[in-house]
Image (spheres, rainbow, N blue to C red):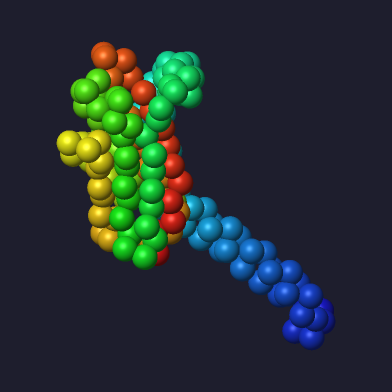
Length: 154
């Protein structure tokens, strides 16, 4: 009987396979729980409840006869936001968020200050290479507006 166990490798193979499989599974579980959780928004629940408000802002923006124009120069990594001259006197404040979909910790928020010609320039050389979304929020006549623009930083 002992000779049969020594010459038969099936029991050892099955046990070895189960041990290796369980070790891999436990290691994978530990690894996944150690990864950072990158949510789209840190306060996603509150943002979700206010989403109708965001839809209203976007609808209001789409109804504007004149809208800001985004111009991105990929060679110099410069983003130019040109505000329509007819709307410059009504502009009160604004901010732009450079949103990096792959990692929310890379997001950058900046105030928008228009020149006398309604131009705002942003140097994007400090941004990580890849796809970004420029989210432009501004206030005109005590009313909020919002636009976004996809850019690819080289």
